[in-house]
Length: 579
Image (cartoon, rainbow, N blue to C red; front, top):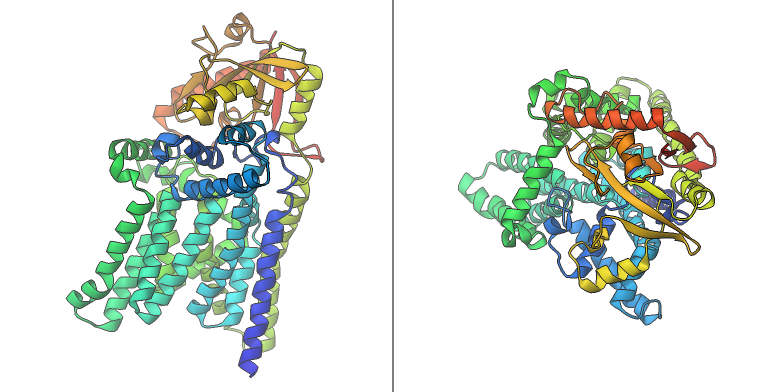
């Protein structure tokens, strides 16, 4: 009876943690319109939601739509399914009269579509906390330790921040956590059903985002350790346990990513292209340069907090020193994963989210190892409480500050209102192709594009390189779009301009330029962590930085919007006049 009551008490705590995660993830999401622009300096526009909506044009090949296999197909297919349900319900209730009307609504005001995706992130974040508890309970065989693991994740600021966002990172982390749960369960039980569930979840995670492929290493290690633990014949183990896993892995991946067979050349080409764009040429030297692996350590330290980061590091080391096989299975994932992404050019914090379930368990593992050296139980409880408070309290403060801020007005929406109120009709504006205030699209162009069934429906490409966009019924601006980024690409949608200079902008009739986005090259060229000593990008960086500096020196800064203003959130937006 006592054991039952204790189990019931812990179930209540986990339920409260899940409710907290869901509420924290939903706070502020409903108030943010996508018309405001980029959210939290992380680009949702032109991302997974738009590409999932593109599937409605009839082509569900992720490699053609721009998703690619590295960014996964499963997330886009799930969003597309949710959008189909939304369309059916909307048609039943009279919101949409046809698919064309539905498509126009997406370009007119995509808020509802992004809200669906954000709710999906919040719900999967909530479920991630549950499955981390279940995985930790298997690992420790202790409700208390498992509850602490779940608490560390539920109160992690970075985890909650990304749970607000319409991106695949939180659903990916959820699938990784479920995979971890079944891997531990399969290793402990050696039941084929659990092995197959573990393999299926690993496949789902890989189909969501390709970097999840590292989860196959813990699965393989669990198989190897299980074989030696059971001491069965190798041929029997392969036939009964391992071979069915390989079959499930291959079949489920092909089922969810069929175009790897139907359109191999395109899919394989996008994988190679994205890998080349994401990693430096040489692996070893990167770890001895500024950036690379050392920047990874900085990101981990900032995202987890120093105490938790150090505890997770100790947990990895101790699991190998003590030859704890389950600990080694867990440790293999972050170790190998960090060795890979430590060499990546793009190292945003969301890339480390999928390691959090492993790091939380390993942190609690090392934490209890330290307090076990105390003789008195009262001292152990006190030390445990103090450590958890030190880890969690700063995260809660950051979480509260963040959620309170995003309930306000974004810098992009403030910039949009300023443009509408201060720039005259017919003004010619140069803006970043991805990061820019959203001045509402011309619905006539959108309608024509949709009715044509254009392959570029998601990008609003018409017959001209410039678009007439309506900001308000009484105002029209001539918008010219550009994109210069650190992948070596340079796209300038301005007729007659071959090189971006202030003089050329003036000759092309450009009157204003809007530079926006903390995560764009406008600001990253000054960050030593990015692209340090990468020869193939030096020329592009040099040209781009010269252009942006010239804009700041020769252009007249009319207005700047950034997070320093207490009522605003989001990326910095600068509006210049070209003279």
